[in-house]
Length: 174
View 1 (cartoon, rainbow, N blue to C red):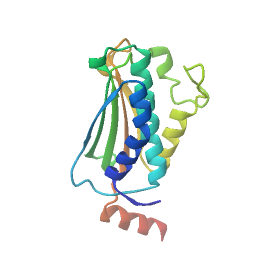
View 2 (cartoon, rainbow, N blue to C red):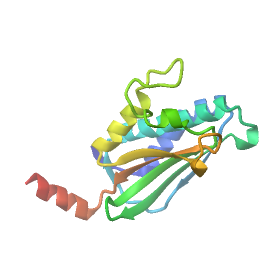
View 3 (tube, rainbow, N blue to C red):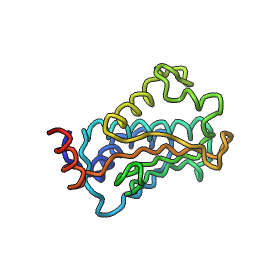
View 4 (cartoon, helix red, strand yellow):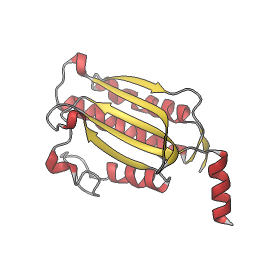
């Protein structure tokens, strides 16, 4: 792990996802907040999580056969502070596909569970493991609470690399 900037991770993931997005005629809107605190992470692993979520969103849009005007993904990276997590950076990927069916939702992060004929069922399970190993959390919600076309947002958080966090970790290691 190393000190890394969210903007650089996002830029690299977008570059890698570009071919898939263009192939599926999906546009991407990105918002990365200014002056985000650094992350202490493996930037390649986090980039792979973002890439997997972008590809899944593009596939959801494509399989829903949405018209061009609705073939959009939104990627946002913003700071957040909660009593439970403290200072975190939240990454979210939103699509306007069909959403996650209720019968699938409970098993979505289960290893080897897939809804795709060519899928292995490891992508989301590995993504969640990577995020949790970095001290974060990964989850999703159907937009509008529906699984019939409202779309889905996947969110994950990572602890911000603050001076207070580094001091706490140093004390814990001692």
